[in-house]
Length: 496
Ligand code: NDP
Image (tube, rainbow, N blue to C red; front, side):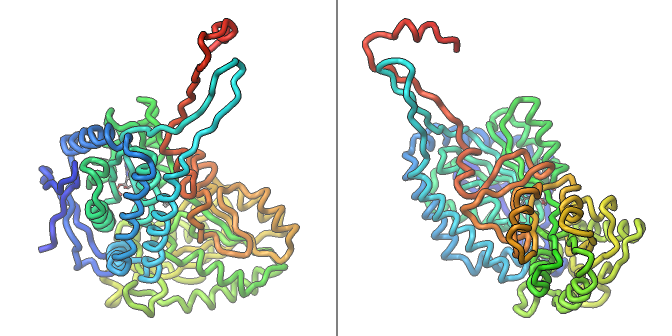
């Protein structure tokens, strides 16, 4: 029997009253069930919100550096358990062990970074237009925060939200994705071990449509921080708009790599392979389109296909494997439906595009690296986020045409340009419509102290990572401090 997991509310692991359970399956072998998680209902959500409210009253008064020390302790425990957490991510999500280790490492590096930031939660002072008056701004916590996260970075994305939320003095309720709840469970166990006060961090399991939606609507939640698909983000924004609730959305991408005729083609091919197939194409920054200047399109395509054929697909725990399975059977069906649509729309399938029929790959959500050429910008595979190892090769006459194709898309998260000309590179950096731009490197590979997020349908303009989380998780307060004996007459005449 697989183990049954509980919610974490007010410092206690509480069994759910719900009779619906969510089975957490290993995507490399569906026969392996890692655990059963509750579909938490409204009563449990209200209990968590009440606990977070009670804890907020005291947590917000804990000095910020002390809140930072708590985050540092949590980070050290994540570092201690690096190997075990990485194995867990691979078993639950499917990505290779090496990728899982990088994810865990970035999580504890981010804890170190954020714990130091706790001493730098700064405000400003301004000169006043009146005598003997001090003007200053200070950051204040927002309150009870709902963190809703996806399955593709099941440790790192929660940490990107948890650590800045906590150092700013908020209390949180984490609702992880139902496809990877065990990583979040382990993460919160470590928070408990680090000694956090009851109610500061709460964990609620369940589906997005059930538990997630109820949590977003709860009147006791002051801020919703969401990472996931654009479709869900829109629904959350609509829900929050009704009660004017603060919300922050980090959404999908349809990222492109441009390869110009003067690029180092070996580097461009390697970059494309990393961008396309790491995490089985399930990164929000994954390369999905490769737009190649016509004169080198033939040789790029030949070399890219050769390199793609070398990708070894299998269980991510095997050190000889380059690419693990997709996260679940439903995601695999969705990716395959896009491949079918590409064929129908007239794109030319060069590689992949099938289900494995023999053991052991037939037992999991494996999907081969898949490459289309003759892709036109209007096709669904060129416009929509596939979130799998599927590449669209496109040709463009020159930089102008390539930029036009790249920007002609609803999303704007990440983009990359391979060129040996610095003028061209800087022109591209300026004109690409995306939150992240890379020159001579893949569309993936952000660093934790840089702002992360996108434009257009990729989000609502906020940025995570770096110090930017502080803007999400704090409110500005403007303070006017009069230290003269009387309020001046002029002051009484000011308009606001
Ligand atoms: P989803 O939008 O399907 O789900 C994300 C989270 O939202 C899950 O926890 C999900 O629950 C929950 N959810 C679903 N519906 C609702 C709802 N109505 N109300 C509240 N919560 C809900 O995204 P995916 O899981 O498919 O994640 C992949 C997506 O995330 C991709 O589009 C990817 O580009 C994007 N992403 C964006 C990043 C960025 O920073 N821009 C980074 C990483 C990923 P459950 O799954 O449990 O049902």
